[in-house]
Amino acid sequence: SLLPRQLARLSKLHDIRLIHFSSDAIFSGSLEGPYFEDNPPDPVNIYGMTKRLADLFIEEEAPKHHILRVGMLFGDNPKQHQFFEKMVERAKRGHPLKVANDVVTSPTSSRDLAILVRDILENPAYPTGLVHAANAGQANLFEYLSFGLQALGIQTKPQPVKADAFPSIGRRTLSTPLASRYLTMRPWQEALFEYCNSIVDASPIIKDN
Image (cartoon, rainbow, N blue to C red; front, side, top):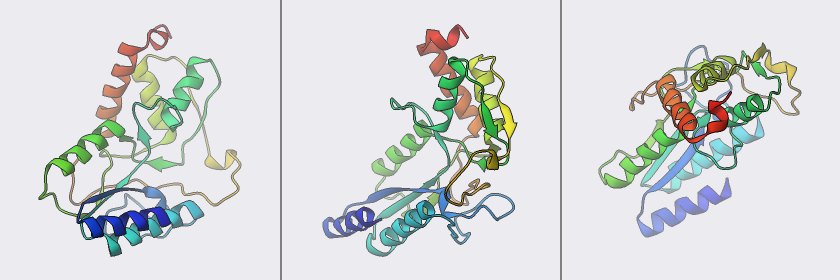
């Protein structure tokens, strides 16, 4: 959290805009329905607390800030450490997939997020402040992965389980879908389908499955 604070101070010192990526992890998951920008943060684990602290530092010390709160990302990523890409790789290798059906998120396209960042950078009048920058809609992880595998033409069927089937040291959040009062992004299904088509076009391995 101290690095965002330093960036906020440099932003103020040099009179430049600061774009910061926040997380749905700053919410507890106890709310019924999606979280909007005006819902009070209530993190329940260390990760969520550090992300919230970073938000506060930036809000207080960077006059020209854009805090983009995002959901679970998917998109081009050479490290393949995101949930969707990891599960697709496991499916391609024939591994069984157990996926939580009680963890709800707003799947978010990194490409759509990059386009939003470009729009902010190219528009000096873009409003500052906090916005939930997630693709519209929500899904549990089982629904999310099932949709993507079908779009890819992969026959592996994930098995729905509860989140407590996966041991965890810390307290985790279960339902943190995001919605915005200020920004409209396309549905996650449309963005994910487009991304899956790009993978199929680029990967004969997935085409053969």
